[in-house]
Amino acid sequence: MRTLLCLALIALTPHTAEPSCMQAELTSQVLTRRDTRLPSDGGVLVGYTYATGNDVDRDDTWTGSVGMTRVQLAPGLSMFRPASSATSFKLTTKAGKDRGSFTIDPKSAATTMTAPNPKLLTSKTTEGFRSMTTVTTMKLGAAPPADAVAIIAYDEQHKALLYASFPDTHDKLLEFEIDRTGGHCGTVKPTGQGVLAGKITFAYVDLFGRLSPTSTAITAR
Image (cartoon, rainbow, N blue to C red; front, top):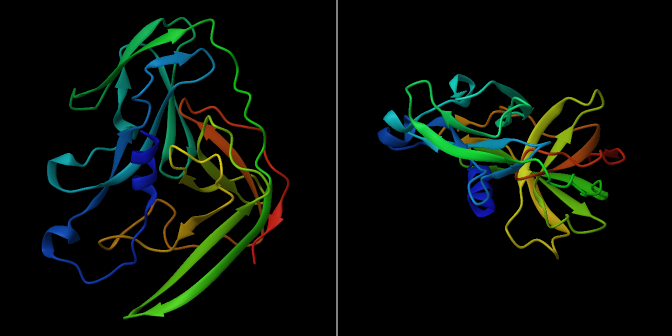
């Protein structure tokens, strides 16, 4: 599942597309699939990908069979937290399509993820055919915790700017692409066309939408 999350985050440089490609839109997808038994302090994590036609679906219209709170963690990344009294629930779209059945584990342990340890955040811009692409690379002092599926970047006011995912196996991951301007087939990402700049902090997120402590700030170069 974390591989799917990673694929959802790969942003391609805008280009002249085929007609079918030009119809691509952002669509939501449930990321909490492999383990549907949720911790009591977590919920269902939902990310984004691209789709066309009837496959386009936005999670801001989804509902649950019990009371739900939708928490936006970052642009394109949200978490559905069920009411504290819930023991199980279903998540459905506005049209009534099933997006998964989940149960709550009241004896689950709290997350033990540590804060990210950012060492370097650099951006490089290259010029292509009728386009400019900026790729931002992040270096860490220690690999992400095993439970981390993504990392969220925040500005100086702790506003979430974007998220980037990790592959399933990331115990040796110390350098990775955290952002690339543009979108897919001309459809921009939830963050638009901006790049990371100024002082940035970070937090890890696990498969249930739980966050690690926030890192110390690092200045994007």
